[in-house]
Amino acid sequence: MEINETTILDDRGFVKINGDEAKSFLQNIVTN
Image (cartoon, rainbow, N blue to C red; front, side, top):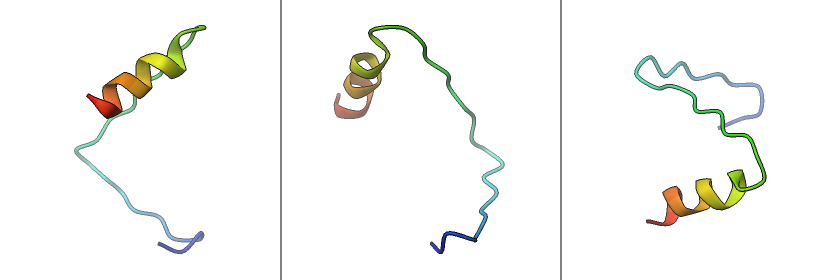
């Protein structure tokens, strides 16, 4: 995808994670 292209994903959402363990938590979701 080019840097200036936009794709709308209607059936997607966002998750916001904060805190000291955020990186570890997200890494476990991706790898498990």
